Image 1: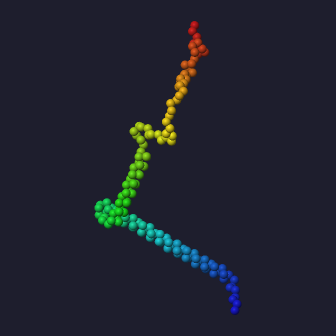
Image 2: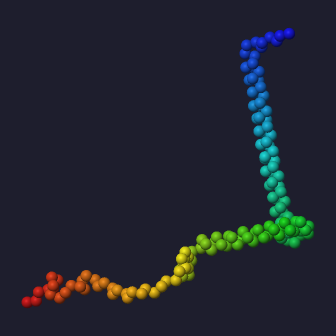
Image 3: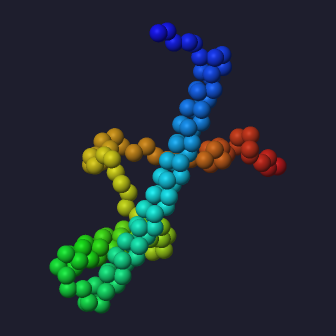
Amino acid sequence: MSEEPPPPGTGIAEMLSSLRQTWSTAWDVRALRKRVAALADARTEVLADIGRTVYALHEKGKVKNADLVRDCQRVGQINEQIAELNRQIEAALTPRTTGEMPPATLADETELEADQSPAAPPEEPAEAKAEPGGEDAVEQG
């Protein structure tokens, strides 16, 4: 038996229906992923709150679990490093008020050698070079 060709326009209608279904599915999946991301963010916030609570209890000596104590000690070490770096930032931003010049950073540490040629006498100003009786002299008479 031979199949009859579909009526004109049927292929386009099926294609549009399939396209609508694909877009609908994609939209639904996007909405579900958005809800998953929001719940994951909420979970992260709750875990952070739990961590802050445990750390506060640790600082009061109320945490006895070895795993939690170890993790709280790591947090304490990180806090100390942050505090030290903040002190360094403050020191770098605080203007020096001692009146002392900061030491120079030199790229070349080669020692300076003494100049072997005798020092030339300093030049005299032009006014001192004018000779008596020259153009600048005042006539006496």
